[in-house]
Length: 299
Length: 280
Image 1 (cartoon, helix red, strand yellow):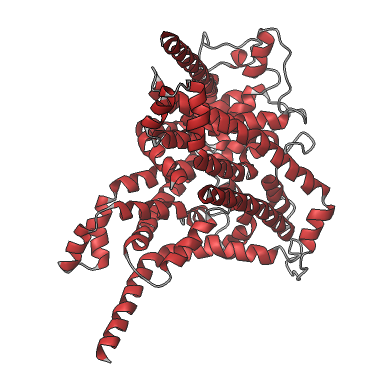
Image 2 (cartoon, each protein chain N blue to C red; image 1 turned 180 degrees about the vertical axis):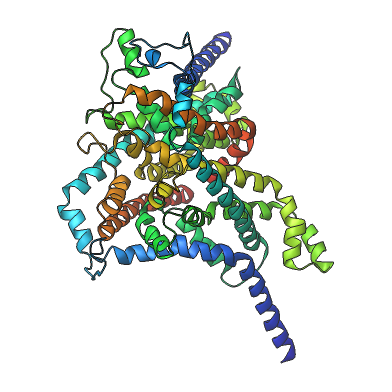
């Protein structure tokens, strides 16, 4: 009996020490990360608004309305997907090229790496202000340059056809450094013998890149695509700073719509339901990623 | 053989030229921000791009201070400082426990934390706001700071670092009678300097730049640089008034300088931290 008690006491002590180390973090994490997820789900099944704090349970009504009736929400969701479709492949291809370029260690590669990643550390507020100025219809650098070389200026942020590509271009500039760093780290893990062997077998640079390097990078590429889809679907800052969703809602994103619904119209429950539809969408993306990885390890 | 070498060189040159062109293009927005902040307004509204202005002015910087930018700067500095200090302390403690100590539910809690990394914060923006409102922290600097402290990524980074350390030193300390806390503070934490630096720098960039959360939870008195700048030009996207350009670029330059300085001086750590995020 006595040794058993001794063991129990030691175990309790161990647990106590473990909890005392982690508890400060876990409390903050529970209150500000975990609890909002649960309370947000509950909130989305009520009709709680700033005007009507005495809320009642409405079940899936908000979700049904969002999916079947709300044409604005559908439009903004499609806008956000459009932005994502523009950004993700462009970032991946440019990122692959730049990683390959830097990895060759030619003159200026170190300087190039520093410059390419630099925009990634800037605030979206700074990026939005600077690019808003570059895109300016009359005096902006891009249009004055276009006019200077004899082309006609483009109303970047003020037509519904050009506004999303314009924002996608900003994201490409701002974030491609992240893709480059991740791909570069993965490329440096590839043993040089593999590439050398391909060259001996007569593959040229282009072939060995697409047939050896890229397939070896596949797990990293899949991960990068998932991360980038999630980050694109969160689109908020650029819209807030540069376009306010305009013209006529054509650059309105889901996250910005959530923000406006809650903090300008006071409709907390409806906005919260939008968040969880977005989350369900991202969950599907994550599951697809898991399936792709699993099929990789299976074969 | 000679032909192969020649063609190899040609692709090398082609890639180098394209890479360099991209790098030069990528510098332009940052250069244009800085140069526009010291251009007189008459040059800002020039019909042709002027790369090097014949005269420069600091009027825009003086104009920036007509707005409460010092207050924004102060708020940003305070929130950034406290987020970094508290995050490093709590995350290193937790990271150490998840790496070294054994306690009930350890792996389950850690897995749960990693899962929440996949959930973007925008999704819980509203319920989080309601929590902070109920705690009466809206429009306070604490309301910006406290919810930003728990970073799962920081815990993850510390955990990975402690796992990579040899255990012998800590074991020796324990045998010498150190409690787990003194072992952590005297032995493990000083060894974790590289991880601490990475977390400090990444947290600095993060908190300095953060827009969404401070936007939701601050007012005129507590807004940060990112919020003040985001609202700098009321006509954004519709028609930029030329008189906003100079001051806007001056404010952007002021806000970007600290992060760019930190980045250029310590970029090794940032790159290292970023590659850990992705590669696991």
